[in-house]
Image (cartoon, rainbow, N blue to C red; front, side, top):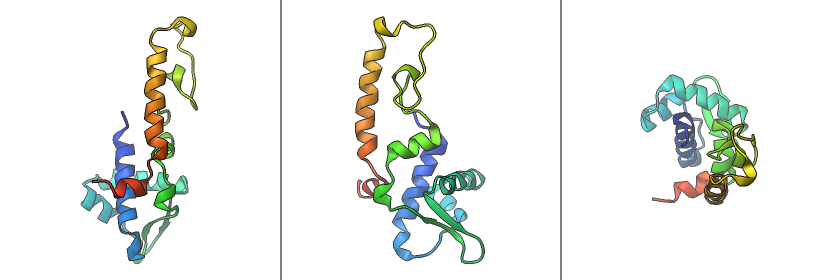
Length: 138
């Protein structure tokens, strides 16, 4: 399950992508209001997205946030890993955050293979789904 923080990050990126043709920076307060996200929480998320090099920000009267990357190049798998960490449901099946389960004999584990399959199918979807693709689904 993704965190609320990750869900809000996706919603904010979708909002910015939907309004990028307006060629203006968008204030966090606008995104918070339109997407029903607590403003203080959103500001923290937007700063992180800026640090991940997905957004640029500008202060002042004409300030706000803009996408730094093309929505076609922002994939859910990368975003989830940046915001939440591992995608896998168990540490022993994680590709990027592997850790063995201390109580488990991995070679004889009856659980691991099912969760590897879950990971693989989840990754198939997340690695091919961009913010831009999500904008056009409804």
